[in-house]
Amino acid sequence: QQSAEKSTASTEPQLICQIHSKEMQGYCLNDRQILCIDCILTGEHKNHEISAIDKSAKIERDNLTIKYQQSKVLQDLLQNNQNKNISH
Image (tube, rainbow, N blue to C red):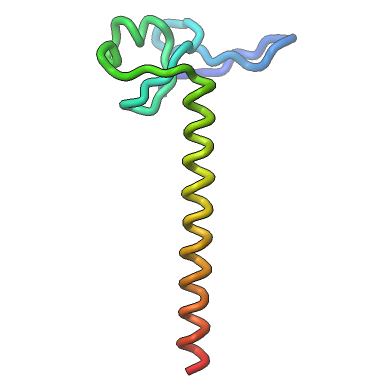
């Protein structure tokens, strides 16, 4: 993993790159990983799609919510099918 948290007294924890010891500033959409500026410009992510961390976090959260809701629907369908099989 490339990141570590560094707490400050008055702000939220900062994510710091373990490779370059710099603050994380972007999100690689290809690898789904947060990156510092050096990783973005010179690392293996150089030619990847990069997005703002906040924007990507919201998208990832929304995707997880959708997947969770879909899994609940499937779970309910399975439970209903099991109940029908038991009653017959």
